[in-house]
Image 1 (cartoon, rainbow, N blue to C red):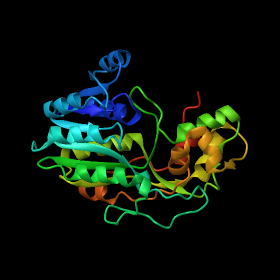
Image 2: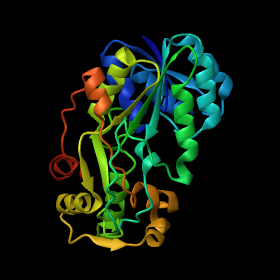
Image 3: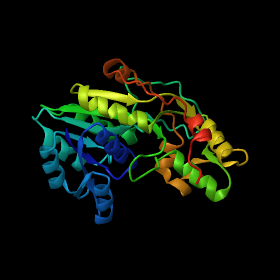
Image 4: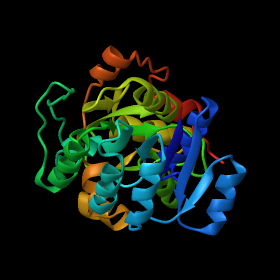
Length: 298
C-alpha cells in the first residue's frame, strides 16, 4: 500500500514508518522542516513538507494515499477532520492514534483505581479528556471508509525512526539524571497499562490489513505502578531510593497536564479485541524488566 503518515519523525510514527516499510509498504511522511525531510528521505520515506495546520496538504495526501495513519496529535481537531474528509467515501483505512489517558483519573499518584476498562466496557472519561474522546468517535464514524482508533497505553522501548524516546519513561529518567534522584508523583501506587513499541507497530500493521470499519483497540500487554517503574529506573541508573513529590512540584518539571495525567493518573485497560479479532500476539511482557535490562543508559 501507498501510505501517508503524520508524525513520521516522531517516536510512534517513525517506528511505524520503519516497520511498515519492512513489510513492503511505500511511505510518505509529514515533516515540518528541510533538515528532517532529508533524514527521512535517507531512510526511504518520501517527505511531505507541512504541519498539522496545513489542512490542504493533509486533505490532498489523504486522497492520494491508499491508507492514512495519524501518528501525530490525538487532539488537533482541524487536522483530524482534514484526514477524515480525505478518506470519506473511499473505503480506505484511516488509523488514528489515541491514548489511554482518555480514561485517566486524577489520583495524583496516591490511590489505585479499581477500574479496568476493555473495549466492551463503558468508559469513564474525565471532563478534560471529553474532546479527545469525541474526536476518537468522529474517526470511528467516518462515512464510507475504515475509521480505526488505536488507543495506546504507556509505550516503552527504543524508537526505530528519527525519535528514539517515548513520552513517559524518558522524562522520568531525564529528571533522575539531572537531580540524582528518581521521583514519582505522590505515592506512585497509580498503575498504567503498557506496551512495547515493536508490539505497537505490529498491531498497526495488522489493523491496516484486517481491521473492520469502526474498530477501537486498546493497545496493551501488562501494567505496572509508577513506584515499580521508578524503582526499576533507580536500579538501572544505580541511584538511591525513589522519592515522591506532589503534582504541584512535578508540574514545575513536566507541566501540569503531564504531572496529572501522564504521571499521576491511573490508566488501566485490557486490549482484548486486537487479540481476538486480529490475532495480535505481543512478545514483550514487562516494562520493568526492559528498564532494568535493556533501557539505554548512554
